[in-house]
Image (cartoon, rainbow, N blue to C red; front, side):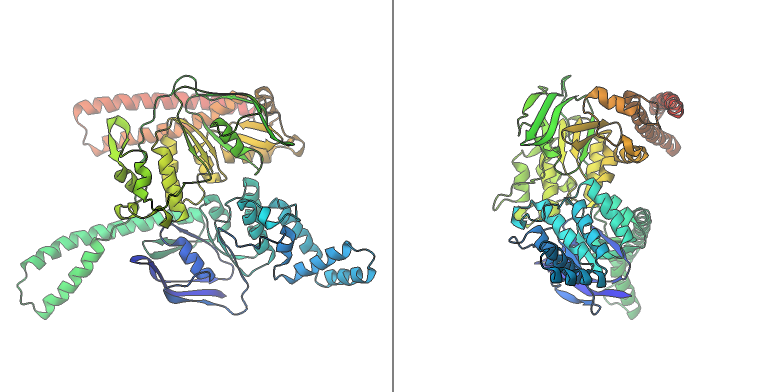
Length: 623
């Protein structure tokens, strides 16, 4: 059953055309993930389809009596209402019945009103819905129903708006970055909720695991055109790669034909026959195909990192509380060179406070933080970039200098750097206030990285970044030789870049887990219910907790070594393949062959040594 038909819509801002002649449909049961680069019209298209914005041309036609709900990035809620009043102000009749029943419970003397409310609950079969309504509020940490909207944080408002639309039970649900401001537990609950509930979804999100687990179709907007992939995120990646390869082959053939036709055009006399005119028309069509260029700018982040000394960052029994809320309790840790730590935990457990203490923004109540003399922090905060009126994109970068140092003594200009961050020359002279939210985040990230830090601290860096930029950032961080400390609810991102985790469990308890997020979920799921009590955050107790894991007989350090060996083996296999490909190409000179052969022998030896140690640890795990 067709719910929505989008017919030949177009949108421009001045001379800038975002898209035109876009057509598609949304059918019952579809769960569509909509992906595109930031600044290419993703939010505009979503707003048009959801009815919050008008297209320049075209129509959006809805099926009659269709119930639709929209979750924007910035929800519009009445600040004078409480959480409870906001929920019950929706147009869901069952919620009104539940509201009347709960009011009757507060006035037990009016037996007639209570009986009437009770009978209505029975007639509407509202008892299960009441349980569900309370569960949703509990899962989204909206338990203080008397709190006013005006007193809520931005994240709480987004969660309240999400709860509101879930409870309104729409036929079709539009979502703009639904996982922003949700912690990992909330995101996983929402995935399960959408799997069970019969919603039709059309959503924009950069959360790739969410796309993988929720969506049954991916629609991509690229260069003003729509491409549809009837599957989840993994299916999209595989089939997009095939499409791009086929397009490249077609473009290469068109270029060859263009050269032949160009030579023919140059040899033509001025008086042309009807036959030659037809060929001339074909020539211009071929020319258009041949000059079609894909704008997949890949950022090549080659920032030269400053040297790190032996002392990096030491945390000595640091504690922090706000009133009765204990965030850290005598936490100790000594950072080593090249550590890559992810921080996870529920909202309000102190993750951002922890980062602010490390960077000097907040002072611990007790304990000491020692920062090495050579350490230069690069701190990406959730607050984002400070916009100055009348400031252009290029001016933001030039505040840090006209040239940026790269590896091997090279340097690039501020303009070149911006191009690498997907800002073309024309975009560089746009005013910063004209940038989309994702573009501002990308510009802010650029200002952090070009300061040449050797210790990167990233607080929710993936919010509002498109998937293309996320891939670029991940590739940079994989090559970054310094220390990395990152808070993120993006599980895909965390899995790719961190070695181990600090798990903020609340009440000052922090557990150091040797592995990435997926490793942690497997470990947590494998534990028996009685083991799920919070462990102490001292190093000794953290190590002892691993002895309770029936799966592994490895010590804490062996767990870390096992994870490191698996990563090293992947990298060594890639290097081995690269050198073998050089020999297959047959273009190496004699002296180069000798050098590469020695490299290959060394890599093969390292692989064998790592595999032997991996087998030893694997056997120990099975004991």
